[in-house]
Image (cartoon, rainbow, N blue to C red):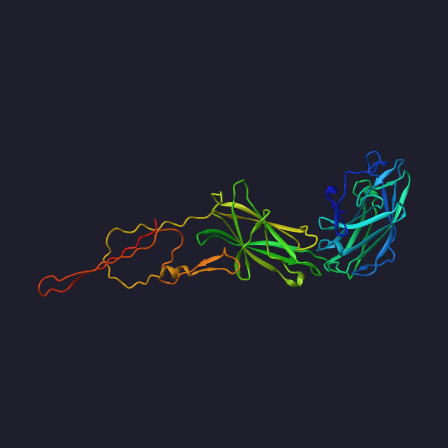
Length: 419
């Protein structure tokens, strides 16, 4: 049985989610006897016997709770369904019902915790999800439990273990009853693998960028019945503001990934992802913005969490990678122009007009923050707020002496360079 924190229990009844009041106990009985978990739970054989099938017949068995002590003990049922497979729980995947046999009138509900299935039942006379059953001294109570699989039970989930515990810890772990329910057809169960591969790191268009591939692969039989949503977090040692800039390659273009609640949402993997889908790769690149307080190369941690895109969106898979990242590097200063005249023949040079230069900036469709700047050979492209380019030429001619050859004072051309 997996380890759980009882304070995190959330039980779904219909479409209403109720937080179980873990601190409440019945007035007439203690949750344990002398501070020890003493109750024992026993399960009868399911009827009919055999594996469960998706959307098929249900199975019923008796659940008996015994109190071997001389004091009444409160029992707050917690039915744990631990699946063997890749998909987390969705509320309609399992049907669950409890009827009183030798116990007060009972209501029941099926819910979830941390992506796993759980059921509970409680006195019908009390508030929904509240209260417990007072098992009398040296006495017992019995219920009839009915279980089945919904038609949408994931095809990549297999058998599951059903354990009758209590969320007030009144059941002795050594006396906790359980059943392993088989699911038909039998499958080879697997899971989800994710891993990062750092492709490159370094200068890219006057920015320090790290390029990584995020890879997904499903194993085992079956597919995921919902889309898969992924989110990233970026962190570094220290308290300085990093000003991360994250982009993903989507539809052949680098597109900005926005941060929300300290996480970056990635494109959804469509429903039906399975082992036959092969490896799915999402290229990513990361840089530090102009507002970063990081002044030197720093080790960055990137973590991905994967969850169903709808329904029970609790993350069920995660992975991480570390890589170095440096802040923005200022462009190297241009060489100081020579003050001495250059006596060379003038050649024809075409200067691209400013209007044509600005038209070379292309904004990626659907993402105004993705801009590429291109310039033709021989053109002069300018970005930013530096001074403009000046061009002047002077021509002079003189005839010297009778019969002497004509002399031409060469044109001089000077360009004002950015400071």
